[in-house]
Length: 464
Image (tube, rainbow, N blue to C red; front, side, top):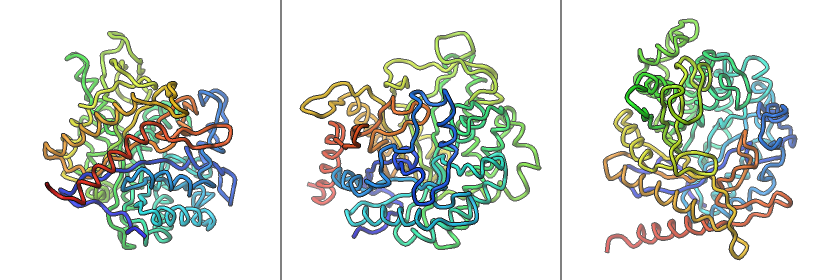
């Protein structure tokens, strides 16, 4: 049996992995005592999901976890990053613990270890128990406190076999897409109130990390979808600074500096409220991450509103407090419409290393592709292979430039429920037949397996 996942050593070879998230793959939404999450509720709202689907079955990984573990092992990668569904462990979000939910994650972790794969767990990938949302969700401090309790419960059960922990995944999405733009669960459009959610998400991370370390945990980090922010023209510099503040600095400033900077407070004055940011909060946040995870897909190019073709972002959208602006997406793009530019990942890794001094892990990188070319019964996704090859090369270039990057994790193992896009966009290395859940690896799966084999061969043979 493999040893538990730990942060790879500095200057060691880059480790590889692949990832999934609970609501996107598990299904079994009402089994073994699981309570409803905000994504169950949001998906039932007419018009919320592009194809009117939900995650009630998803990839049926709740029953097919061993088959999925075989697929990960077949890749030959080091890690499998999965997330834990809070409502599976605490159906009401606090108090009563559902041991059958923890039993599922026991089985998943053990199945990975038996196959020589290191399990890496994310405690929160957006599926907040609906009972907590009914009490205000991440707008309320009590949710951060409940999250710390939940983290301690999960660590107590799995901490003997899981050594690398992420508290949150992409809190920007949870806060700003969920509570301001309203395009993700819980679907609220409350503008600057989303800054409250952002503070409570970082606070919940810090509280959870403190509890877990007290219980013996090591290597507790947080995964952020940071982005390089490139003003489309000089006149957009002020707008770009506001976008950078809400996309990047609202997380890094408290984690590294223990403070919210003046530029951030200009667009998020709520963060100057002493009733929200209480004495001791920022001190607890500072230094609370042992590592930073980075999810990267595309750069962000703000422009002055109405001056170029792109998606218009009104004030109070996903960047509340920032004046209206346009986000430009240049060609080439993926099937989801996101610009492809691997240089953005290299720049982001180098800059985040300079900014934080912390070990960095690329915890998600991948491409939504049309997957409409099939050869000999397999998806021939050369476009995804090209995307991954270029971004893996960018990660290695950042390491060569001095960034302390220790892992590269591909999003995602399986075609799955892609949030508000439903099943209309596919990121997976493995195709899922929606009729019977048959898993069929794509050409990109074979490509990544080949990369992993080559790296393993070089690692064991040593220098020539």
